[in-house]
Image (cartoon, rainbow, N blue to C red; front, side, top):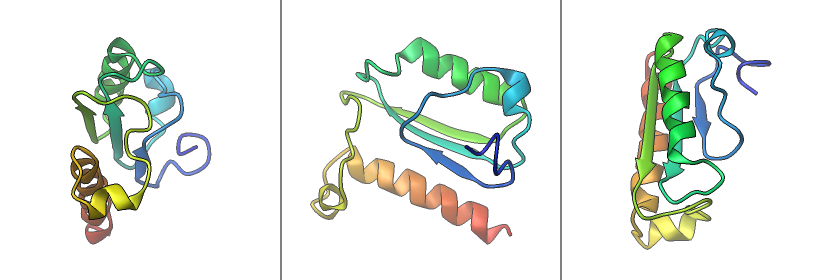
Length: 106
């Protein structure tokens, strides 16, 4: 969405197909945060590596984290964060800190 509609918007990605073409990602003018699990069959580790490498090659600041031991949709609701479940709370902190930094710089 950000590449095609809002290249100036900071993006936090939990789902969707990561783009891996440098020429597409180079349209972005804002950073990207990615939250993934290492057991996610939908997004295998080689795809996530290719995504981060393409972001880096396109010069897009990014904060991509792959959490160990979890699969797709590992963070389902805020109750997990309220209970302090891990890595859901870490993912929440990653995403909110990322957005806070972006908007504080504006």
